[in-house]
Structures are given as C-alpha cells and as structure tokens.
Image (cartoon, rainbow, N blue to C red; front, side, top):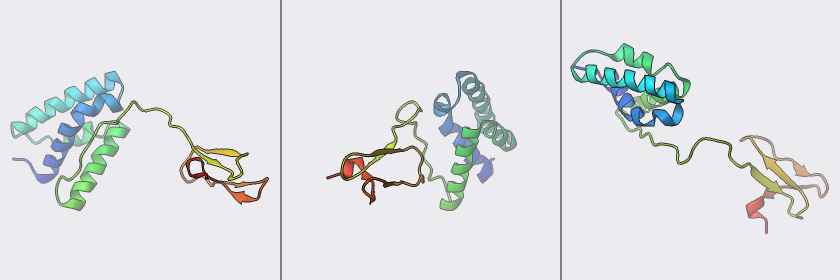
Amino acid sequence: MTNPQEEQLLEVARRLLPLLSTVLNRKDAHALSTTLQGLLERGADGENVEAELRAALGRHGKVKNTRDRYLRAAAAEGGEQFNLVPVPSPPGPIAPIVWVCPHGDVEWPQFHVGEKVPSCKQHKCRLVLKDERS
C-alpha cells in the first residue's frame, strides 16, 4: 500500500512520462523514461519506491521543478489539482514587446519582463505599446 506522498510522486511520474522528450534531450529522456516505467511497475506491485521516485524526478532541473510545483499544488489543494500540458510549440526565442513613441519616430524593444521602459528623449513623453498606438 502506498502512502499519500508516494502516490503523488507516482502521479507526477505518470503525467511526466509522455512529456519527457519535450523538456530533455533524447538520451536523458530515454534513460529517465525507462527508470520511471520500472518504478511505476514496481509501485503498482506494492513496493515502496518513494525515495527512488524522488531521486529520479530530481535529477534534471526542469523535471525537478515540475515535480516540486506539482507537490506544492497538491499540498495547497489537498489533492491532485495540477495538470501538465505539453508546450504548444518547440521552445525557442520569442519576439520582444515593442514600445513606440506616440509621434511615431522611436521604437524600443523590451526583451525582459520587468525591464524599465524608457521615455522618448526627443518628445519627452512615455512610450506606448506598438499595438495600442492610435
């Protein structure tokens, strides 16, 4: 019989298995998939695999972060209310947010969230989002 923490880790493993290739390289995804499948089978047979699951799900940063988010969400909700979904497209750079002068002659790309948006030095006014310019 499994304890609640072990059951939560088993659930993380079940949900992560089909997503491993989207967050890890092929070699690491295959190795972790093989390990997790074996642990899931042993857990289904009643063997306590909590420590091994915790270690396996903690070897890779992205997988560890997902494991920790799931466990926090499960603790906060009193159960499993956490859904994992694959990313909609391959990971990669995204376009910056573009700010412009309302007078139309200055563009400034914001590459990082929280980065302070400057004022237009020529017109001494605030820049606005490119899509909101009238």
